[in-house]
Length: 70
Picture (cartoon, one colour):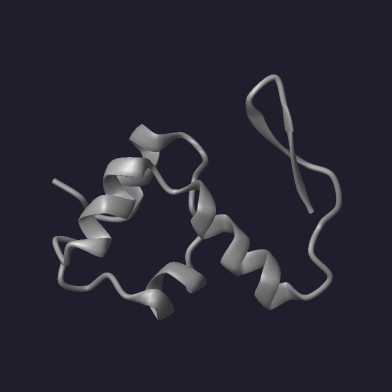
């Protein structure tokens, strides 16, 4: 379960299932990466299966590199 602490997301309780935990990580993608994905401008190899299998860093700058953005 997510809550907020001084405007920042705070994990109060971890989701019960491994699937829910993997899906929750996608909520923390950098806003510009989310926008690119919604507009179909992600790298050609990037799809949900790829995202679910990767360990996605929390730092937005590291996400860009790890997921193959230019």
